Image (cartoon, rainbow, N blue to C red; front, side):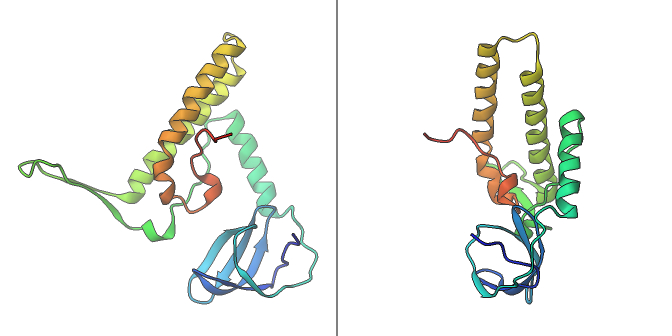
Length: 175
């Protein structure tokens, strides 16, 4: 698959017509006429109207920044910036009890999303601590890692909230 260069024009089934404004090793940043800036996976399905033949620098400033963030995240408790899908921005989560005598609860979906991503961040930190532990034998590490993987699997219901598929929860994959 040949990467599209900056300036390539595309037609996306959901967002309409747009122009590629940045390219990374995993994503196209596309400015759409009616929908503004969106980030698309490199292998996402869309029609190429006109491909720009420019050489693509797959190590952009964005990728350098991301690498630095990944290194910092690995060695500290810094969280990555995770964006909520556009359709949920400004929305609210409404919980209604089955008992009509009890009061329901509303909370901003952004707050709920933040709490979900914090659970994910804490699971990742736990995973790193388990893997680097000198006090656990290999079988104990494997057992604990399987619990974490199953926890990720339990959280996949919330993937609908994430803007980028690469930031979603992934449980155990079938073999």
